[in-house]
Image (cartoon, rainbow, N blue to C red; front, top):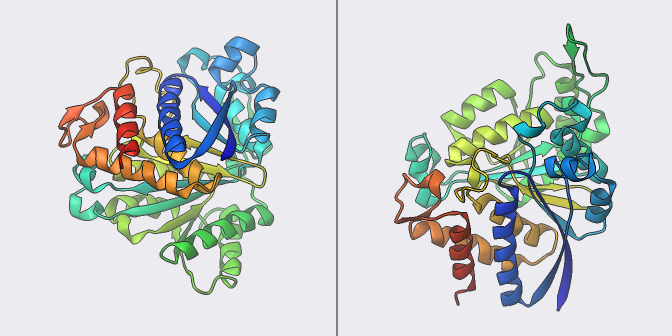
Length: 356
């Protein structure tokens, strides 16, 4: 029996609730597929500030680096918004990603047949939509130096080196090879020198992947096209800030940000998390949608642990649960047979995953 060491970071707000439901489903499929999961829990974000005075304890970094993979919930909230930037939960998250070297953020946006009416777009526009956004995660304007805010003038610096672009580009091209062999690189090369280097590097890389059709699009047009005709995209590769914005746009194509998982990978380890935030306004109310976190756990099984059968079982269980009309509050207006709270949704997905 294979045994895997999983680090858990539940974080703040709804993070605790959604991670608990994902663990419940993981334990069920582990039993069904005859492997074992061992968990170690670590602190990050607001709760880490409250307990240790710092948003990212070194113990958390070390623990995650020594695990097979990390399942992460969400961090942050108004409680910590007034802290200095270096102590904010979000700063801890950026330092966490940098310390782990997780430079490739994979964000799938798949429209479930049962939820085509959950999107504000017409069903015929989104039916069959299956997009993968590949976002560079530890470079660009979020990490660029110098940066300053002196109360009168503020600035941030967008920086990418060619090696950084090459490594994320190769991830995207190789992923495109396994899908529909179409890759759209998104930049703003008409006005940004950084994007000019990005585009030139992607064109250069494309020579190594002649089976992949490479296209280019400015980020403003890409945002418009995601809403106008999302099915034209298969794999999108872009920088940190553009990927952040475009993947959230894609969530509205799908219908709810509570449905979108993500994987962040590098040479050392990988982190799996929903793309939504900690939603402190609904924390403890039992109405958070755990599906994105459960989907993230399924990605972890596939990409980090090699337990593809278990991953498929979870994905099929989610599809069947939605097909049978079970919804959380965020999706309650869309063909709901029964509206479930967070824990009940985790329970029903677990039950479906355990069916023969």
